[in-house]
Image (cartoon, rainbow, N blue to C red; front, side, top):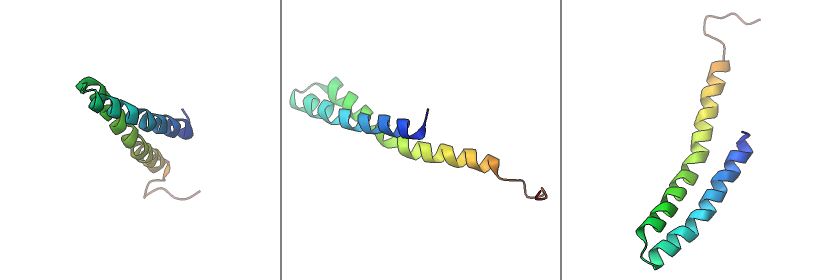
Length: 70
């Protein structure tokens, strides 16, 4: 998947989390607000995870120290 698509999914998760948290706390339904909190955490962790994944991929593209430039 493209990076922008994954960031869009993270944004939608963040937006979807807020009503779940609100409805769950107002109606005293723990499962609903916990689901909202889970969506919030996943949406918040996706962008840093994408940055870390990209850094690992770029590190493999770097030449070795002993390798001569071509």
